[in-house]
Image (cartoon, rainbow over all chains, first blue to last red):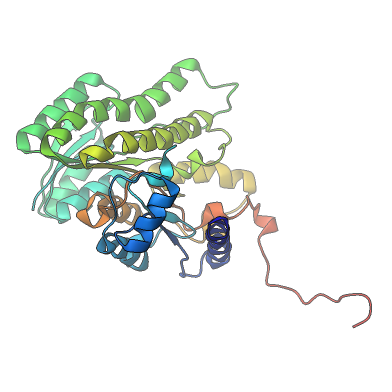
Length: 92
Length: 270
């Protein structure tokens, strides 16, 4: 689990670094930070961690956020992190 | 389906662009703004576009205006969206900032969103859903010199939004906060004017060195609109930094702008 956390943190760093080199180019680099999704792997993980999420996310809620980041509607976002996690990462 | 939406600071800039975005989607907008020529022009603009809104002509820092706005909105139908956008700022050092100005900035930028939230949440709970989007600033992420009060209130608004999001998620009310970078608004331009004069650069060159280009207020409006939509049903407690990547960089004075990589001659064997 520590390895996965470290890898995810590193991914954020890579994305921010790429984003900074892309300023002014019209290319944007953003990161989706996904909470626990309604599938068996995430259910197991959720139980193992003892974390509480308001409810499990549906896959289309994640894909909707992904499509937003890929669309013109998010043209002002670069180097941004968009959590899709029903407040999980923003609370103690 | 038409929703009832309250937008503060709707006469100009991001607030106006946001109101227009909701109107274009067929929503009902209650616009809260101080009486001004800008507000009259904004009303003309949206009428010219074939829309109308309900205006509450008052300072958002006035609790009576808040009660009036919420009562008007509730009369139109269930209040589904609140956008706390109105903000005040003056550029002055902490030493020279009068306590009266500090209090006024805290009142507009922090207390008004708090009071509006308190007034709107019972309606959203009754309706079983709702979305609140607060507008902070990249000034929430670092200490903006000459704008300490503004930065402090925006940082507080981010924290407030996340606390509120955690409180309201069991009620299916989502709360998110957007921090725009330099946006082409009256406020954005006046801040930029003061910073670029220090840097001694023309406006376009300064903005280009800072974040590549200006952010159009309509771009922020798109983000606010998406966050308030059912598409964003999984997103709450998000702090969305909308700054074209500016804060991924350390502060770069223009003369330290990255240049194309130079071929370096390495000493030694090889």
